[in-house]
Amino acid sequence: MATLYLIPVPLGPVSPDACLPPDTLAVARRLDHFVVERAKTARVHLKAMGHPQPMQALKFEELNEHTPATAIPQLLAPLKAGHDVGLLSEAGCPAVADPGAALVLAAHRENIPVVPLIGPSSILLALMASGLGGQRFAFHGYLPAREPERSQAIRELERTARREQATQLFIETPYRSAALLDALAGVLSPETYVSVGADLSLPGQLIRTRSARSWRGQAETIKDRLVVFGIGSQAP
Image (cartoon, rainbow, N blue to C red; front, side, top):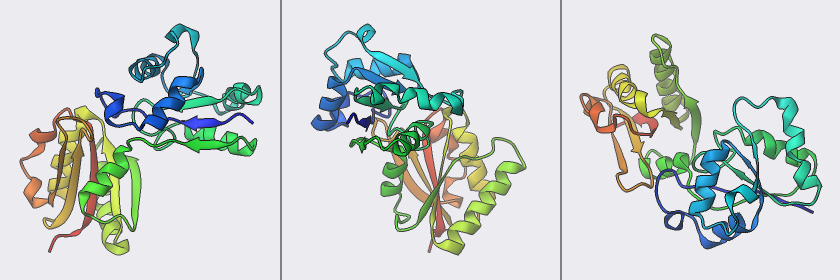
């Protein structure tokens, strides 16, 4: 039976050989059917992975936030016809904070085998490096961009981190990352831990965990960078 392979890609402009194991690259290179978040980006990734076929010979279907639920079953057609399919996100692991999860669930409903492959996940890399503990954690995607909703969300995450002793993770787009760090430093209790993982797995990555007080006035260090944030319990 055909298989849906979940193929991670680099988190930024680095060689796939630097962050993807040979087995993952081997699978990506042998497939010719793909479901991707954006075809243009997927072609760049596959070319960098050393796919032996011309990009125009490969078959791409897009699955993103604009794809209606009614279109998902049709994306399974190559699998039902006996073709293995690769699922790619824009960056990192597909189906994690990513619309590809809808295709994975549809495959399970049709008893189609699903095989996740090894590669970088910004969420797990940030958690690993935070020191805030990975026994209990939650990922919340994006926080509200506007006030007062953003501050309300930050306070609620802080309460949850304390009450459940669980690390609270979330992300922000590069152009709002500095503003969010300023908000965290100003809204959280001064001794609450805040972890910052910027440009993870890339040459200029920044990984630091400090009290909220210590982050005051430091927002410029992550300006225009892709960041995974974490909130933990109070620092000693």
